[in-house]
Image (cartoon, rainbow, N blue to C red; front, side):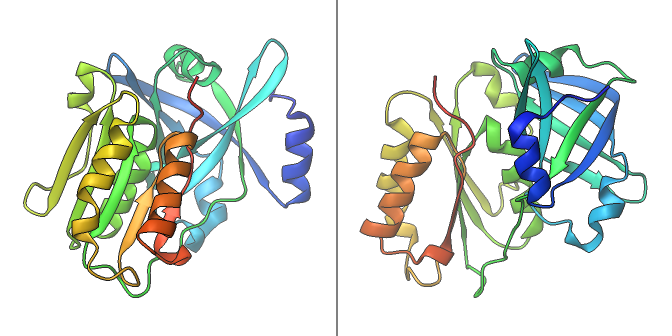
Amino acid sequence: MGVAKGWEGVVLKLLRGKDFTFTVTGAEQVTEHYRRVHLSDGGLLAAVGESLHPTMWVRVWFESEGKPHQRAYTLVDPDPDAGTFTLEFALHDGVASRWARDAQPGDTIDATVQGTGFTAPDPAPRRLLVIGDAASLPAVNSLLEAFPRTPATLWFETQHESDAGLPLCVDPAHHDVRRVARGGTALVDAVKAGLPDLVDDPATAYVWLACDTTTTRTLTAYLRKELALPKQRVNALGYWRPG
């Protein structure tokens, strides 16, 4: 039986969100704080067809104490022919993480597709400027894989020692990864110290940013107001709220 989706589900349905049921086919523990869950797609990939795009995400529904909770997750390694993909979870104390820890083959989970989108930057940037963390890692990888020949600088916030083992899909030959330990304004400070030298022309620079909501909001304001990047050259989304 699926999760009763409450008022959020009603709103998504009014916005023409499409519902699907995924089935767990397996899972693997990547690090002690990061887990992959493999799923069959319930017809999702066939339904989206050519709309499948880099950083594509779905709203997954979880239940806790009889109440629905929806969280957004990026599709990892989607295979339309096989009808399969993977979801990756940065584990913490939350309803989605608890589900991921316990997921077994045959378990099902409901999801809604609504609101996701991606517009490739035009003109194409000479270098991708990417800011993320473990929660946005799947989307970061998806973005880098979509532009395999474009150099990139990535500021990647870490929290645990085991984050060194996270599956970043980077090529040392043309990807510059700058790891920043989480704490206070460390990530914001690192970006402000290093990013301006990489922006030759605000009109052609491109920054993709997905961190916690506070950091995302702070850096978006900095990019737009202080570095004068046009709105269409900044793709920013707050992935989680700091507790």
